[in-house]
Image (cartoon, rainbow, N blue to C red; front, side, top):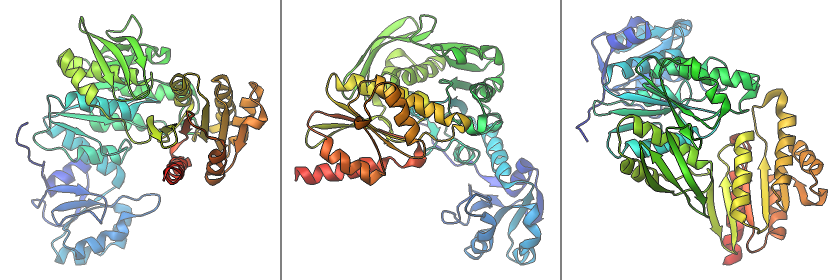
Length: 476
């Protein structure tokens, strides 16, 4: 890896990037970084005062100056509330902008364009984070990679990632999330991707996007951002994704199980902790063993392999990267608990398509043993929430599980769907986290397979923790 140095800023460059107005300070003053959290800032950072749902960064500006901070980006609408005259005497650089969140994105776009790095941008209804991490694992075999910390995929998190660019970075791997129309277009504008990856399109974030057609349009904005000479890597197995091919001027590369795909998989096999397949890649084939269960993981791996193929990595290098991948906590993690119970922790998030995939994995893994699912609400589904939750209940019943636990506002809809599909009411249980765990303690037995899943806001990981504590005490 090459020697790397942070990309530094002058106040003039910040003013230029944000199209802001200098209220005080020296345009030649240098800064080594950008921060939005007053708790994690050095005297050499410029502070961008973001107005969030809970905190307003403007309320911390005076504290930052008192602690030695000498660079501020503020909203011009709040400038008359700020002690500008005092800041002048402290030699503080203060730049006023129309919108500080947009200014953060503009600074990130400026930083991206002045760096030597290329960008992979990944979006889709499911699999974004896993695909990003797999792609990072593949590219990391040969390149100096920058990628997001955690789930940094919105108009604040994505810019913060790009603002971490240094001179040595060769590739940036990003995921683009959305809740409302226009967000993907803005994120693509900020990161200017060289390669765009679209994993799939399903009924997620319907509250903001309105319909599956709205989801398609929003995700398609990534493809619109790609021009001639760029690459669009698309899932050949998703008909909605294929409908968007005409949206891009980039070269299209298909991946998937389909024979139409350039990067594809054969001979997919699942075991308790691994998924294996034959990767067919540029006329070669090679066996890959992923350290994660779930047939759907193969699609994510193929997307990452397609990125590797496009930037010239060998089949063997891609294999090594994919096999180095470790699942994110709460994403299809299988744990063997004391007492012979197998727990599938998929609590990180949920939507209708990922629920379907999780039930399929549970059904494969349990191989005739008893299965049980603990399901929390899927959030942000708008007016379709009731029907989509009923569908999840029906899917649970069709999967042949022995017991279904439900939690949340739409618990009754999930139960109704299960009952309509023939699951006896005595095999469903609605309750709080604690009530569900207490019932499970009396119901679970050796050899059972247990799936726990729900949207992030449902905090279903609490059920996992309580069950682990119970099983460890029981073993002790």
